[in-house]
View 1 (tube, rainbow, N blue to C red):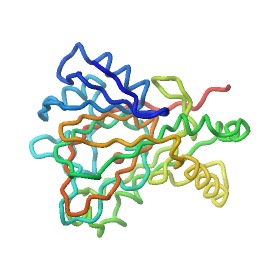
View 2 (tube, protein in one colour):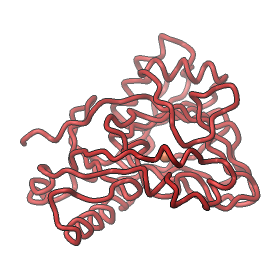
View 3 (tube, rainbow, N blue to C red):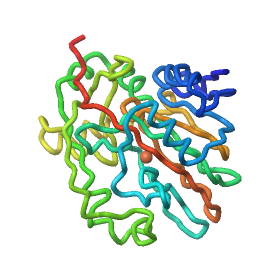
View 4 (cartoon, helix red, strand yellow):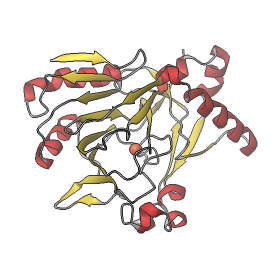
Length: 278
Ligand SMILES: [Fe+2]
């Protein structure tokens, strides 16, 4: 097995591993903890293999809003057809941050990829946090943010292309509101990182609304710097897993008139702890 880092900040490509082989798992898991996102190339993977690999990480967390794969309710379809304009997950986000116990990670299987484009960008939230000034880190350490599914998956977006086409649904289930520390201690690595994101975070609880808006906007602009990023270029038969507690991600919607199909399994996580005193 060969592990090749993708950037200086996060991400690694794993060659020569097989998600079906139990003896490969410890090294894959270690790379996942160290790099926050890993992509395994050239996997022969049935839906059963995908689910079995996910269960090595932990119990499966079924997404409420995505269209499931027929016959596999635990696997979500992430699809954009040739004639569709809107991709799923175009904004910077972490999957399931609106849950009290946000998902550990998402495992994607690339079934069909466009000839060019359709990459996924990811951000290291630990690297972004560590690049803030010490005074700002101390300020953020004690704060709590609210995250919600309502404005993204609820009734207000029912006329979006993704909802009308049936790719997203179950809007009445978009009732989650969760509180998490703005800075968390990562449950696996122990590294501190920012845990707010532009799609699901609504506000910072301890601040006045205009202060919350300004601080979040500043943090989001900071996190968007390419020094904290990696770009995942998909190939068909890739399996990638990213850590939702350590990253943001964003689907790049630059492959109009081509079809892109991914299967996604989400692994359950734990409640998130605030950063410990430095
Ligand atoms: Fe996502």
